[in-house]
Image (tube, rainbow, N blue to C red; front, side, top):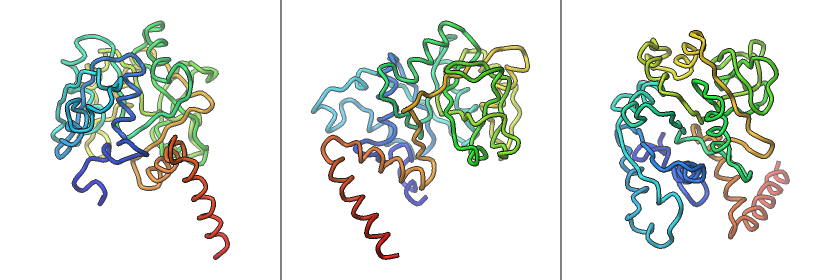
Length: 270
């Protein structure tokens, strides 16, 4: 607020496109074909933007336009696990992907993070496969941190989660990065999960329950050069916009030149 007073944060522009378009482009590039968008009240703009027949979308066909979109509403903000639970009929008893709409994964790899996750999940068939990113140790208290079981390589199992731990108590510097591949078993776990902070249902609590019952959870680590852009608060949104504007094929060079001069002016005036 107030930027999201009358529009969803997923529609905030990050570079030339709103955040949600970056996400659905990632889904399309990973081979997915059907997407259920779960949103709250006042988020009709997302549905309108992703309408392939909307004004402007007819100018150039893009891969994300081949996706079939379905829509469901989370009437009350009861947490991520509650939102995931709404997708049970859509999943149809099959493994499914969860991609947070306020997180953009930047990757220049020939095989995107999400595609690697799907491949690992198909091969190992754990209860869940989670994307994780190494974060600064002093910042672990802002994230859900995983506790690896053994060495944390590019793909590894975990023994638990710690939600926003202090640096002295964090089991690792690896944070969940807003992408999950889940088995249908998670729906039963969500139904048995008790509300946490502010009465919300936390997905990490449901996954922790599955771990306690003997299910395996795997992690796929973001590679060097891959990272998450978070638009959940003003600072990280500013950073995301600047990063993608610098990568703009038409205006990136001019933006970089302007930014250098602007920073030099700030330094000079101090």
